[in-house]
Image (cartoon, rainbow, N blue to C red; front, side, top):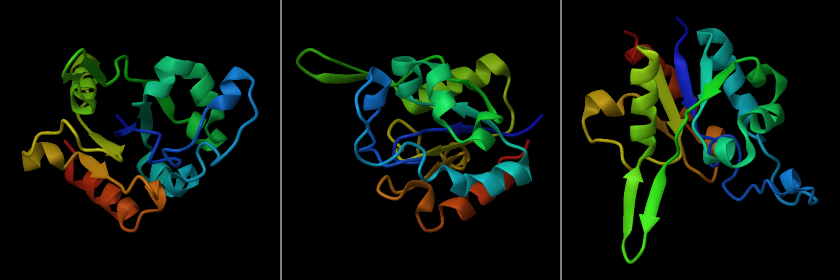
Length: 163
């Protein structure tokens, strides 16, 4: 089975300031979606990665719409998306109902995934346990996949996390 890459979009494949305005028929302004994604292509090919999107964009705009915006080489690798999103509930206090780690863990259990890595700009909710953290590659949200060392860390994580 091909390794699975859980891929966050904002802060990884494009700046977090990227707006999806054109989904609503509005003119696009600012950074283009997936402007950094091609940095991932050589590793995706070398490892024959299967990609699962872990992004609120897939629930907000629809999986097919978001997948359709990705570069063609990436579309061919996208196997699905996590079914849940990170949730914060607030009335008077902010309370985290689910985290990215929780969402990914649910997917892993449901689909019996054994070789996986997460690429994200955020580590909130991830346990400090090094055995768990080795599955997380965190990049600088201002540079995403162009962050120094991110691709090297991804290669290392894929190697370390083999079953």
